[in-house]
Picture 1 (cartoon, one colour):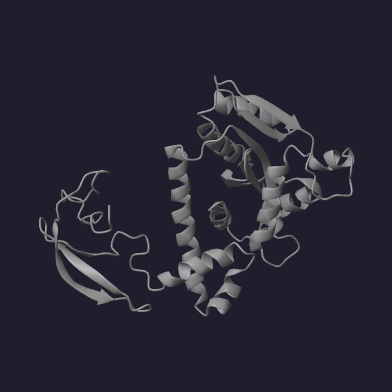
Picture 2 (cartoon, rainbow, N blue to C red; picture 1 turned 30 degrees about the vertical axis):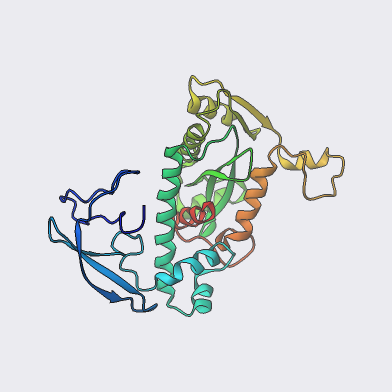
Length: 300
């Protein structure tokens, strides 16, 4: 179908609100009602009027970028956000207001999050094996740790799902963090359950899928609970440092014999491509939902 055949009336009560089914040709339900030019790109956009309900709409009404004045910046801002650049630096490079970059950041994250969820439900993300583990970060200060549950396909480096949740105090800073911020609930089990649910959906077409994870004892219980009565092969391995120590060439940073190599490489790319995930820099995550949004951009 061409673009004109996919036009729909924005009125939810109109019978022409839903798009036509694939393979069927629908009669023209609208009349031409002039046109207008966009403010920045000066593009000519045609306008229409529905014959049934009289509602006016344009060719941009059904787009996700409808009513955006700087829709031309979406692509470049998306690339720069996934290239290790901060929002303020992007505003200087693109020569726009920092508020524009912040709004584009949230818009792109919500768009790609819904797009990824649709891909999961439709079965387009279907694999035979997966790798599962966790990363750690912090919120504004190292006294507020965060846990990041991550699942990657075993066939190729494609992220199945990633979720962020606040992590309980741990390590040498636990006593200081408790005195300063009080008790902190550990919400990482909910994040791991959500990611494993997405893994179960992506491995649904495989009779006996394989899941590779770290040797954390709780992973086996959570995987069994996520897959319930399904037959799944769970392989747990020690951490990457031990594997490098016992490898034939321990001086090589890239350990091809690491069974969690795809997940570890994806985690390293996250540390490199997202400015807020880099180590020993001034850029930090101020809000948890912004870190989750930035990770959805990396997934896209």
